[in-house]
Image (tube, rainbow, N blue to C red; front, top):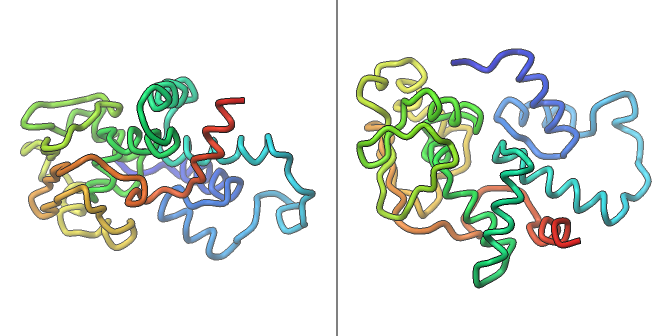
Length: 209
C-alpha cells in the first residue's frame, strides 16, 4: 500500500502551496525548497486579502485531515452548536476521527495511508471492524490492527516504531502500545495537544462570513 509517485508529487505541490508539510516526504522537499511552487515561487507576493488568508487557513486544516469541503462544513456546524470556542472544538472533533487516531498512534505514516487502512478493514475498534475513516472514537475505546493484518509489511514497519521517527510525538490523550499495534483514546483531545498547524479562529471567520 505505498504512495504512488503521482500522489506523492501532488502532496508535495499542495504542501508547498499551503506552506505546511502534509507528509514526511513533503517535509524533506520543504526543507530543501521552502517557497511556493512554480517559476514565481521565490518572488515576493503582494499582501493577501483578508479573505485569501482565511481561505488558505481553511484549506490548510482540510488538507491535514484529508477531508472534503462538505465534511468540513458539517464539523464546523457541529462545533458551532457546542459550548466553548468553536475553533478549538472543531479541531478536537476532527482529531477524534478514526483515521486521525490511526495516524497519531503511529500505525500509519500519512493521513491518506491511515484512511486506506481503515477503508480496507484492517482496523478494529474494541474488537469490531470499522471501515469508516470518519468514525468518531470515544474516550476509553481501543483502536487496534486486526490480527490477520499484523503480518502485513506496512504494519510490521509500524510495529517496529519506524513511523514514530518522522511523526510528531504521540499526544497525551492516546495510550499506545506500538509493538502490539494497539492504542486507546484515554480522554478527549485538547486543542493545545493536537499536532496540526492552524489558526483555527481564521477558519471560524471564513465559515462565519
